[in-house]
Image (cartoon, rainbow, N blue to C red; front, side):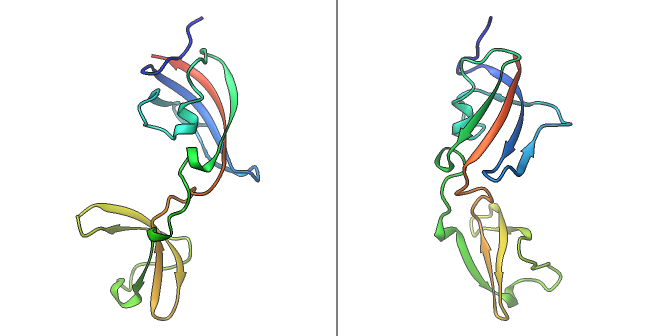
Length: 142
């Protein structure tokens, strides 16, 4: 039976859960996720679990934060004067916004604190610092 090796293009179905069992992402109801094994297209801890699997095989993979989205970087949080944010932009806690860096790159941020004078935005990935668990099934080796 053919087994996955680095460089293979594969398709997997997956369900990602947090330590409390809450699902944060799943391919259920969608096409399987396709990627090249070992290319860095997916998080390292999941990528490294795929080699050696055969089509139809299922497994559960625990991925520590350092092999997923890393630890939160305190430098990725920034407070900006509330007056610099247009009045029509919602500032509810947890709201995802996009900001443009001085270099012109668009970066997703999350509103994490709002006061009368400042809004604190966090550019860390929402799953930074979290250990993740994936239930995966190898659907195809292309």
